[in-house]
Image 1 (cartoon, rainbow, N blue to C red):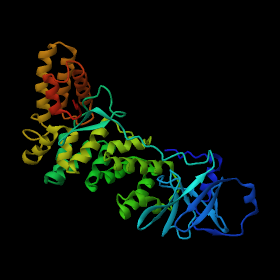
Image 2 (image 1 turned 90 degrees about the horizontal axis):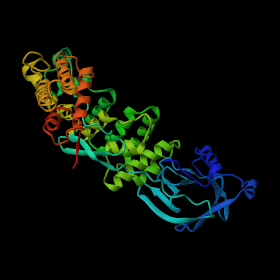
Image 3 (image 1 turned 60 degrees about the vertical axis):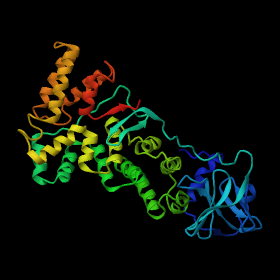
Image 4 (image 1 turned 90 degrees about the vertical axis):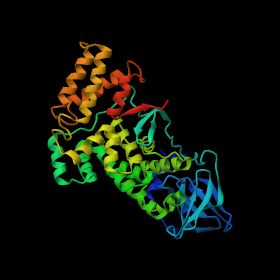
Length: 422
């Protein structure tokens, strides 16, 4: 969100004086007469009025030595923060509607209003687009969870299953034979870096707002990490009482990214539509790009509450959870997990038979599918060419015969990905 003000060229003047958070008492400067008054604010509680000039300078009318500079609100929820004697105890703001607002530990209240000269009034509260949901969503244990239209990848129905080599499974099993601890170790090996960051956040955060903050901070850069720390500081003190955030962020540096993220969270919270993916899209930072795999991980993080085995089954396909359970109960290789009797490989091979029946034994799709499944039995693990080939072929099949055909329904059980909501 860009804070667009008609004060234009004087924006930086206000920011330069951001550190002047107390009322500055000094002789009324002679140069004020050369400045242009662009507004008058009326405190109806204390029966006072203040002149606002085009460089954000303010003084009390009738008591010009009581003066200081207004500054942009770092939370973005208000237009300007005006001078105050003790801003950490009680602050005063001009909101985006031109109201004079007082915020203290008791909350926020409108105490007056401001009149602006034509062309200098606030442009209105910044709008944060709560993303529209697609007709497709991520398959989770809680049903299909819709994802924003802007990030759903057209033509993508499946993503790579979470697979691992026997060696990896043995190492994790040797570190712990407890199901959740083993699954946690395996997820560390099978998930990509961004997906694993989201999973780790889901273990530490129950609320969607906190999960969203953690995920954006973990997958963003230093800028996002600082912003998240600032917002978390306010959440620890004020929770979902967003009216208090301007008071909480008095010492923060003005940042468009911070104001945008606060606005995205508040707008979604007010609408009752807050989601992790929706927050990521609304925030729109270049370093946080939710691709198909990350979309799935984010929805699975919300619906599984950080449970390792449940997350594996959601993000890796339903058979992944069964395969990991087999590791604990039957060991690795042989009749155990990730061996010749791999549940995922067996299921994929069964689908391969149907592919042959539908397309013919010599069809390129059939040959490619069977070759890929055969390669999987060599224990190549996640990210190998066979896994990529299977997801590519599966997407091609899903876009061909129709989403309700038997092959598509069978693959839906095996591979993680998206399902149509309708």
